[in-house]
Image (cartoon, rainbow, N blue to C red):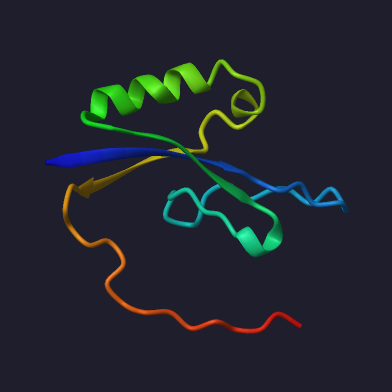
Length: 93
């Protein structure tokens, strides 16, 4: 069974007024949490149509309507491992 998770990226604003990059050169939504971008999980749905409906509802809400194109739907399969490797912690200076 496929599941559809809705995400929104709130992009950080640069103090010097530099433009915020919302998409990469391929047109895919991009973000950098280390630079202050915040990724929000808005919910997981059993159909793509329900996920798209959630995006439409969120676009009417404060904050989300300021970045109406910064949504994405991530598809996964119920019962399937998503993170299959370990990880390394790198100390922050």
